[in-house]
Length: 436
Image (tube, rainbow, N blue to C red; front, side):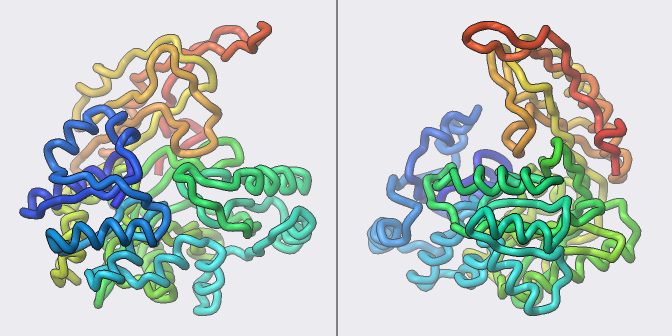
């Protein structure tokens, strides 16, 4: 039911079909999927039936799911899209199909509730406050300290997440969040806003296969960028961190998953490692995005999404995942200066370099590049493999450095604007975004 627009979502359709399933896709509309290059062909190859229905609310979704189920009984029902995991879990439970605990998914999707539950279980995390007005946001900032992080309770892809250094910025960001009533899927945003202590350290994610016996598939090193934002600009699997640090992060992730009661599927748990040890940032009750599932598979020689699909088909796969890397894999994302694109070069060169599996630029001349505020503002990526994670990262960085996106400042309708400038896809070995 619904999907993200690349990576794990599209791959899930293919895997289900390859396992011999008849695939029915429930969606409120196909336009956004067919707009993705190759999207229409992917659906034609791996989807047997498309059911158009309301997917934001459980009642109309259940009506359509039950109608399909009555004619051709479903073996499983799942969503790999962040915004729809709750209603998918609810529908699966109503039909008696395998699925995660509904309450755990609902709590994980609401970062306020996630923080409260994990705090009750003693999971280490930044200090936090939930607020519903600007005055409370100011008070919260004084209590957790500046700089602090202000973010919505139920968004994804770093949308509207900002590091605030002054009280004025806290108020501004609070009002920005509250001014957006609905998310990009048309769902009403939660009223509470989080004001959190700004955890200082480097970020990783722990990929946990939940089940009767939860299993850590591995730790992913992350790089983030964007001025006072938390846009993900690179991932590396498996982590290059020392074993004791990885183990400490894994323990926190497992404790967080247990605190929420998440019991089926992949959980993508984000953690900051600070001077005081690992601190929980958030728990995402679905497979990781940003092609991390591909990095895991390339590294481990397995298919983590196949394990998830098999779980939703009622198979017991706990403890069945390989966790010994056979190689390293890395993805580095291309960023560009805001403005209108006037030229793109170097993609073919980057794609032909050793170990590079993909070199993709997602902007073309005439497109507008926005400021780097959320993951969707990136301009492309390079994905590479190597005999180990370090080599994979260096290959991805070297290839990214061959790609150039040239922009000009977007002109105000009445004229003016900055002069033309060239923008290079800077590799992560620069001072701004050091390699792990």
